[in-house]
Length: 267
Image (cartoon, rainbow, N blue to C red; front, side, top):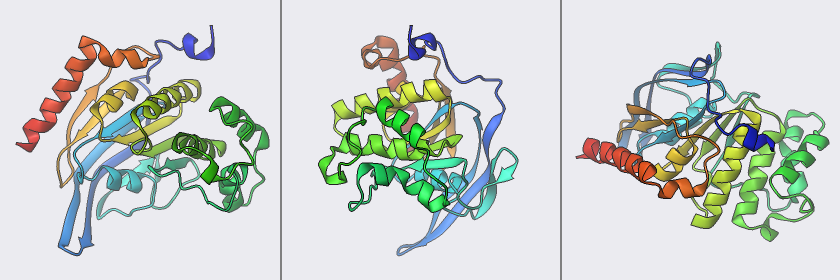
């Protein structure tokens, strides 16, 4: 039995200590139309080793919250902690993956993956990079330029780049939203497998109820702006989850229940 199969029932330990804590987070920012109230008194504890998805309508503050957790946005009120350490700027234990792979077009795949090491002024971990490239199916593509890679391959490279520096927290802002449905399924399976192997704490933003249910231990459902937490949904589906689970009556029922929850709050 391989490592993934051996972890078939794996899910985050509900007794695990909080890895990241959001306490009373509020955010206002100035836009052309005036002051925008993006987040309103959001409090959340993310367990160590948890796969947490944040779901909500467009403009509800999901990305604002995630960027604040990455130390890329300041808050107007409240605070965010990694353990006991306040997050007010980017932190070496936290990596972020965006919807766009953001590979530098003038650097080949290997040089793009080594970029975080250059920015930290430390030697690249060649062995770890090679192991990750093999794990995501990119071994042999090290000298390829971004234009020679498909969208899915570029996002795989982005995942390797983030994991190469071995962060303990991975923040993902709709990373597969621009991919076609088949590639998105492949990427969801891949990130589930990587999470089960590494037990990184993952916080994943999505618009897709199906994607959130497929990936998450818990789903945070946010309201329309100003963003507040409406509900936190526990997902107790066994792992590993295959794509076929999405067609089962139980899964479809859960999708409809969350959709009704969101639609009810919009009405």
